[in-house]
Length: 107
Image (cartoon, rainbow, N blue to C red):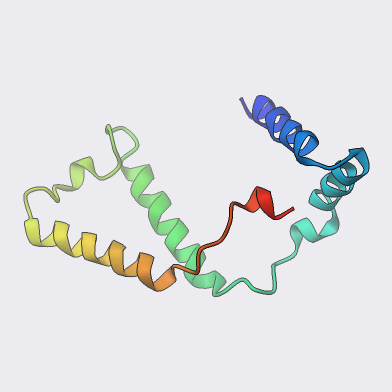
């Protein structure tokens, strides 16, 4: 599945590029040494890693259920469920940024 995904993505590069040189420069830029460096504009890495780990933990604990939070019984406790809804909404508004075009069309 990963191999097929890789082929499709590279096919998109070829069809989107103006010519073969442009496509080659784009692919070589993907696999350059900058792949392993932290971007300068990256906000707070500790907060991001914490949130990723928290979400992965919830998914791991609920991996045998139909969806991850099925067995947490939020449906019975209405105030907890609504507190989570508000927390998600506030985090989207707080961490949201200005609208950006699809990343593929920036090149």
